[in-house]
Length: 182
Picture (spheres, rainbow, N blue to C red):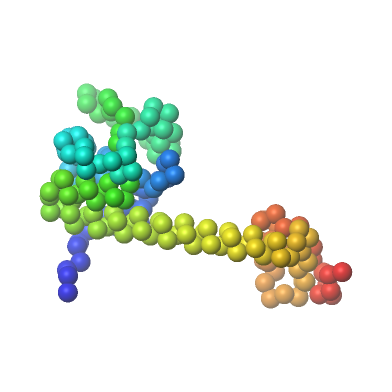
């Protein structure tokens, strides 16, 4: 049986570094480099040297506006580090799930290969969560269409939260003492 790679970075931490951009789940070059135990500069050098392995659906550079949005989300309470060479001169790359795997392959370090497993698991878990949420939203929409815009929720139901949930999703539910909602 294959030995599980040991990680000093929990899966939830890796998941927290992944975000949605241009309709894809991506991770910043600096975060990926940190996970893989290398410098961002070295990761980006390898991407440039092996550009044929990184099509646009694997890796792309952020625009100024995208970088500003990502930066504001990530560092609301952070302070800038002082000193030369502490800030980016160029807009960062972001990597999709496939790009993160390819990056591990071009870096050719043992840690990068081991950690790529955790990165892939994080992407897969987020994809599963998104799929489950999409299924739930579709089922709620179907239920709303079946019940109609004005649903009736009898007060004697075991879950009083059902009324609150219906209101939350925009269904104008009314409660009835009798269970007969006419």
